[in-house]
Amino acid sequence: MQCPECGATHIRKNGKRNGKQNHICVACGRQFIDAYEPHRGYSDEVRRACLKMYTNGSGFRAIERVKGVHHTTVITWVKQVGERLPDAYDPETTPEVGELDELETFVGSKSGATPRRCTALGNAHQDKQNLAMDGC
Image (cartoon, helix red, strand yellow):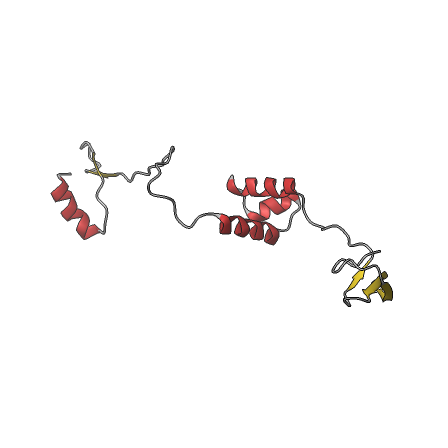
């Protein structure tokens, strides 16, 4: 047996804790156990599936019900992925796909007049001014 810190082979027993034998290195004083258990946690496949469900619009508790992963764990994973994303996009690159939302308002009366399309935004008083200026 070797010390994980310095690699020395002069090791002594140093009691037990939680049913596991502790050892201490005589050379450097590092305390350690025989073998450490592997990291317990969710596999990368489960993590990837949960994040994919989140990006497809599933809620945290819905993911918890389907996958059996606690919702706060999924929230932590989303935060970790978000920290790795850039703060802002590079304006010199042109995106391949864009999305455009449109707001349409119709001006006219309900009594058979044909409605006209207008894209004025603002409060009610400014709308009247904008409509006059836009020709709507």
